[in-house]
Image (cartoon, rainbow, N blue to C red; front, side):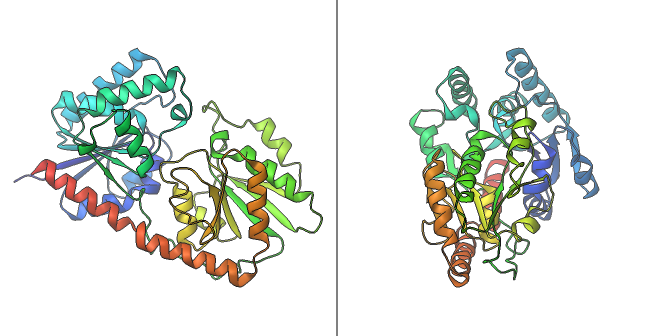
Length: 373
């Protein structure tokens, strides 16, 4: 019997390289033929160098041209047929929608992962209504739809975008516990460093982070710095532009670190990780922070509150409320070294118990065997 072919389909090769390597290794160990399908970027060759078979597909991630999207369905279908794919594992909105339709035309199984609702679900405008219609139409052809938090799953089921019987929950992309290990750095330092890690877009709460930072800096007794780590993402409608960023970093205590591949090394230099996001699928940043035993401040919204137990391994603040965020930051600053360390330890235990990547891999292996056998 020939090996079954599994295709991993995402909107960036970067995403595959940073978040899916453990899953790829597990699938390879099971004897499957693995194909990677994504737009070409700086990480495509890195995947090839690891021994994986990569195929490029062009996706306009922010485009809304219906003719381009219909063409994308045809491209997916043609590629799946040509490569003799047996099942596709799809992530992000366009592969989940148009890749599923392509899989239907190709006559193969589709397993989808709704890793977050994106900007379009944060409003009730025309783009959001179109996205919901497209999800409702395409997901009827999916074999399984994984969600990363129960709130997103309930929203899709309640709005009849997918049948509940097709859905299941995953703990995000999971965390490799051997890769993310707590450092021995002190959690109480002078200055105390709050680190924001995300793309520089408003939906991640960066404006509230800066406003809260300015409130704290007015307090003369505070020795504190605020670090920003992440890319400018100008194609997003809520993006922060270069001019705005340069205005912020005129304040000496606000520092922009740009982009780094080794995010964990920067997290280990910070005292507290802050993500005031408006909504997440399940925040990878927060999973990594907790795995590294870092105290966290984040918003009381789906995909963020799932990682933080308020007052246990961090603090929750109100969404879009910089004043409340500054209050939680002051609470964090008031903790001594022992209290910060205990908060970090409890976060690590939560990750070990609930978010180990083994849970994710086992779920995928079970579903793949179900649909291909």
